[in-house]
Length: 90
Image 1 (cartoon, helix red, strand yellow):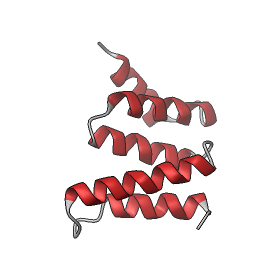
Image 2 (cartoon, helix red, strand yellow):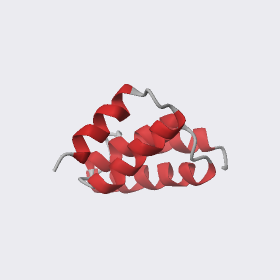
Image 3 (spheres, one colour):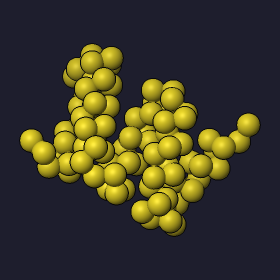
């Protein structure tokens, strides 16, 4: 399976599946999204999902990187603009 949109969708679905153990779904969801990112670093939806995943996993550095990647592709993305302001604050 090398379609990045399918990988990203699968990752987001697994990350949010309440029927699976939390640690398992977080790891699987993150891994599928990271795999999708390797195929296409310009997909705003994938990068925004990764931003949300890394926020949930309390990894602000990785979340900030994804918000910046979103803005490279979509400079006026309101969520990413707010995220960068929030994460850049000391």
